[in-house]
Every structure is written in C-alpha cells, then in structure tokens.
Image (cartoon, rainbow, N blue to C red):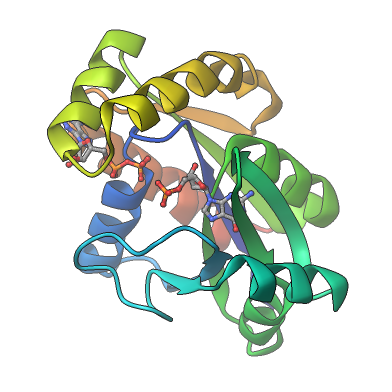
Length: 192
Ligand code: ADP
Ligand code: 5GP
C-alpha cells in the first residue's frame, strides 16, 4: 500500500501541534510526522530533529538554493519554515502515511501538488478572541509576536474554504475524535 499525506493547517495557536501529538499518543492512525526545517530558535523542550530541523538563516538559504524544499514560506517576517522533500519521500517510498503541521499557504500548496493522495484539514478556533487567549496562555511568544500572529490569523481564516475539510477546535477531545475519524476514513478509503 502506498503512503498518503495528511495536511494539518491553521493559524498559529489553533491547536495543530496538540491535536497531532494526541493523535500520535492514541496510536490508532499509522502515520509518521514530517519534521520541517525552520530558522526560528527552539522553544523550551523542543528537540532538534524531532520537532524541527533548526537551521541558521544561512543554512536555510543553502537548502533553498539546493532545491531541498517541497515548499517553504516566510511565515512571519524573517522566520522561514519549509517541508523537506527528503522527509516526504522517505515516508512515501516506505509506504508510510505522513502528517504535516504546516501553515495555511503551505497547506494549500502541498494539496495542489499531491491531489487525491493528500487530505487537507483546516483547524479552526472557536473565535479570534479565544485564539488570542490560547496564545497568551501557551506563554511561548512575546506580546509583539502574538499580535503579529493574530494579524496573520485573520487573513489565514479566510483561506479555510480551500481545504478539503474544517475541524473546529472548541472542545479538544471532540476535535481530536473528529480529526481521527476523517483521517481514518481517508487512509482506509479507496481514493488514491
Ligand atoms: P498550534 O500548534 O496550532 O500553534 P498549539 O497546539 O500549540 O497550537 O495550541 C495552542 C495552545 O492552545 C496550547 O497551549 C494548547 O494547549 C491550547 N489548546 C489547544 N486546543 C485547545 C482547546 N480545545 N481548548 C483550550 N486550549 C487549547
Ligand atoms: P511555530 O513557530 O508555532 O512552530 O510555527 C509557526 C507556523 O509555521 C505554524 O503555522 C506551522 O504550522 C508553520 N509551519 C511549520 N512547518 C512548516 C513548513 O514546513 N512549511 C510551512 N509552510 N509552514 C510550516
């Protein structure tokens, strides 16, 4: 059986990482995680090669020049994130499904490349006010960075209709149940 792509996109703070982490813990879906590259600094607890491949800006630019990215975006000014072709190909060549935690524009681009071999899922917050509260409670960004992320979120939310499906993350357990069912239906379905 050949592997498929599961694209999870949303504005920052909507719960992508939490949902992917919890789905992995449940273990009902056979999928590996696409470790992206970024030039941002690791947050406390983040491990190089596990959460991201943390690169310097020069290293990131070298990987762009070498054509190593399936896609990359300057998601925030000066902060780059990209999906490495090697991550995706390694999984797909081994017949494994792969899940991508990727910004909204990147999600739309990868879906366009892979068509029916990918499902694109947009995680929506109950409201922008709640999104701000979650980013504040997460406590990993300064006020300035949170403002930047909220400003971008308003544009990103308008792109939800470009996705195959939308999951509202109000009650976390319900959102995970919902996402799990959608993904299982996709990977067990006949569509290729
Ligand atoms: P993302 O990966 O999309 O940036 P996170 O998974 O880091 O988002 O979630 C942002 C914050 O919101 C985290 O502190 C997380 O624990 C919290 N969170 C996620 N889902 C919910 C939810 N349904 N209700 C309340 N808080 C949530
Ligand atoms: P964070 O800094 O919170 O880890 O991520 C910021 C944003 O970058 C999130 O929306 C996340 O999904 C996105 N992101 C992470 N990896 C990639 C990637 O490989 N490509 C793109 N386009 N966005 C990514």
